[in-house]
Image (cartoon, rainbow, N blue to C red):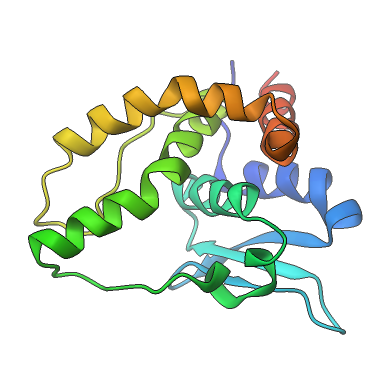
Amino acid sequence: MMELDHQAIADCFNACFAEFEGAKLVGGATEPLYLPASADRPACLLYREDHAASALHEAAHWCIAGKSRREKVDFGYPYSPPPRTDAAQQLFYKFELRAQALESLFCQSAGLKFTPSADNLEANTSQFAKAIQSQHFFTQAWLHSSTGARARTLQIGLMQWTT
């Protein structure tokens, strides 16, 4: 299996979703950002610089977001930059659990190693990594539900892109 780089991931995402969902994945950003569609442009998922993990992470957030969330900048989620208190870090993990569990499956499909992110160099991710592992059963079940259809489409696309 070939390991996909960030551009191959963006190309795969765009092949799957640009025409039918009106969403594009674009690299080179200083910080990740989701911009909903407007009258003159499609929805745009910006990922960090040239990082494949960032591309997959942003794609996971988009796949999970429902229609109303996809109409809001950054899906309407507040962001609390590090350093964070322990309580704020736990809240970050709570909001990130589903996205990072899906990202880990996308990494597997793209031939990449998954590393949990705390978005905080001072935080320990060992417990969060265990929570992500325990979430896999639910993530797999969700992938095969109607609400997981976009994620399933991308997962299949990534697997086909690596062969």
